[in-house]
Image 1: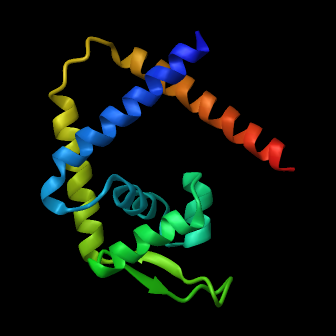
Image 2: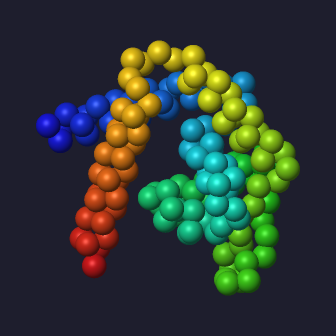
Length: 145
């Protein structure tokens, strides 16, 4: 049963990725770049290592996204009082407008989808997926120590 949930989650991840890429194809922003923009929108400026930890990916992966976003003028570097060699990355006004527009477009598109489940089912599904994500993160941390 757990295997079925994981398999369905993987398939959903790939479907969401493809859906988002087609929805935002005119912006030339990858799903990974969108994730970095959204992280900064929700949590504010952060260093690349902090973003990597928050997203559960490598620092190098986040650095690639940040470099691409810097080229598009969607983010900027700021001094980091906690670490001189690891600047904070912050949204520019242009970047904030882009991610807010993307989120609005997604909400609009999602509201038109008919999936045949109630809000409580969505809340329950969200809770289950969150619980699995945290359990996996805890297992990774346990294995690393």
